[in-house]
Length: 367
Image (cartoon, rainbow, N blue to C red; front, top):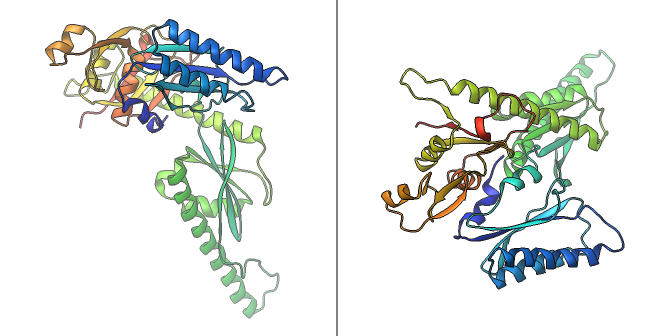
């Protein structure tokens, strides 16, 4: 999962209020229940030591959701009397809860916001394509591309002039496929979609697929729907689930293989908290792996004001010259470091085999 959207959470020091609200229930009494939830979350934060201005900001933000029809929920991260980030959730949280801590409590967000891939669906025909973005939060039309409109259909005669016409048709198809592929690649770069689904007749799908940049080839799925068809939600969910499963398996295999030292005695992966802290301090985390229920996730580490100021013991930070320090959860501290160095995070499902010991691991970069 790309964590760029979390940058606003680390542009200011804490402490932070982290609140998860379930909006999946919709009845006549929902507005009243949301108002009660808003007050309850504010009281919970106040009881943990949050300042009054931040408690009020959270209460107002939740109260504003009393008429919301959002299907799952909302996360709210606040400090200094302001809600800094309030992303919608792709699945409901396990009850409403609030936490006041030195760092934002973001591990639940990585599960609830969904690492299921964002899909860019292209409905392809001989004249162009329509693009649609699909995610756990719904669907959104994201544009279209129109190629040459004539000629696009073959004829059935064998006359020499008709053969010239057929060649023009072939040229039109090839031109349009290239235009669609270029537009699709640009749309993917803009939307940062993880998975591309091509929908249409076999020939048109293949023609576009073959003309996509090499960097996107591994992200493409072709759907066997005819021209004019629209994908059902279950079609998209199936493609997204399969893509996520395969990617998780591949990354875990890469992680397990990288644990063995190379010829220089360096390992390409680590999985104990001291080694992870050292890697984060040296900006060597290439990808962070988290199993949310792992025992090491809530192990206490010490942090300073900057993302690379972290240590297993408080005295280590003083040795490094950091005068101010706070205790924080290991997963939250490592996520902050990953965001600062643009390292992605893979949330490992609890049922996966051969997961990092303790629930935390990292693939490393050495150059």
